Image (cartoon, rainbow, N blue to C red; front, side, top):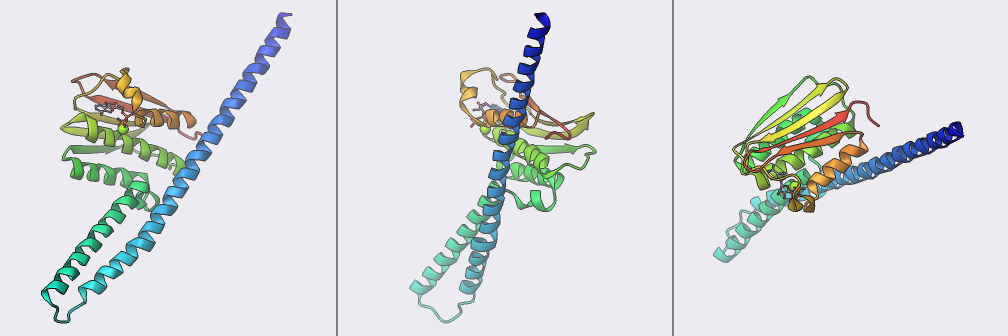
Length: 233
Ligand SMILES: Nc1ncnc2c1ncn2[C@@H]1O[C@H](COP(=O)(O)OP(=O)(O)O)[C@@H](O)[C@H]1O
Ligand SMILES: [Mg+2]
């Protein structure tokens, strides 16, 4: 009897595990499609709209006939609009999927991310990268997106003076840390479950067999740690 129950229990467990694996596989496939689409859109924006705007600006700059004051004012306004649209296109491209991630890989992309975070927020950012193994594109994307959201949170919520971005391998895991010395928060509070940046990170990590640890308290900064198993899939 006991043997019979044990066998049933064992089968049930195996089915649960198989379902969990299938769930993760599908979840990862959804993320992958989304990232591919973002990459495609970013390229299209850059190569299409971006290059046309650059060309338009060059044409406008070459108008050198004597112009009335009114015509000159229109031309200047058109040039300014063109520059603005070009800047918007560049920002949108980077937001969708920074080309540096595909062209140069994770480490340069993280350094670039920290630099642009500092420039736009005025908060000092220190990047420490340990010796890393070769990572596949999906893992690079995962780590980049987590760093991106954590830095966005630091810029939006922390009022920090400095932020540390740290990535290293520890045994069979990668560990990404983002630590700020800002105002901190109560990780269990209702306001926190409202946003979905942290929730999205947790979910995405889970799909890759990883996990998120959050150590924060009001007035004592925030330490976010993401663990990802190497060779997860
Ligand atoms: N580095 C941080 N410093 C202070 N508060 C933070 C930090 N990161 C997150 N929070 C708090 O946790 C909440 C939830 O964050 P998140 O899930 O990313 O959602 P959102 O950023 O859209 O508000 C934030 O609204 C903020 O109150
Ligand atoms: Mg957020």
